[in-house]
Image 1: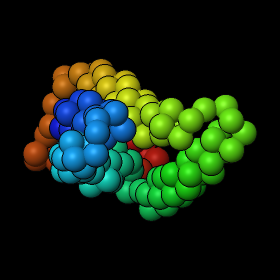
Image 2: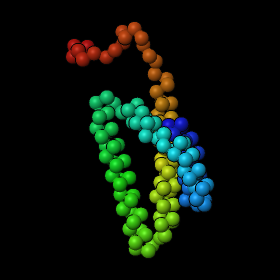
Image 3: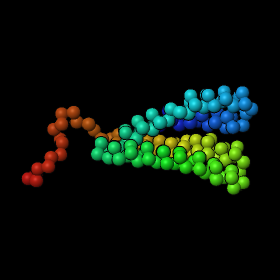
Image 4: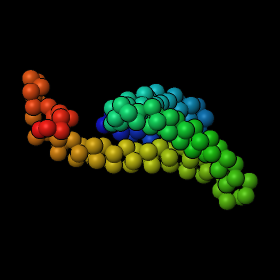
Length: 142
């Protein structure tokens, strides 16, 4: 998750530069933003698989794809609604939904990393017994 946070920290100013700089520099900012910022799907999927139990993994992956596709698809509708109702200009609406959502994702990743780190500290004192002699059994006579 720290790699994802670093990638988002690098890509956030580049996303702003894509919308604020003049045309030749905006394309260069967009190129480097895509290089640094579009590694998140693989990292998120690895994190989802790592943090979920094998019994619930397929449901969680399906939920992840469902939410990503639906929320990402509704972003286009929200930008068009904000611009046609004259609430914001197209550039301002894109600032909210392009770098703004990257920033929100960065905050959520940092919160998740802190939670995972805190919960993993509780498990550090559990000893691993490679002999497998002290495993619990389902025997009702014990």
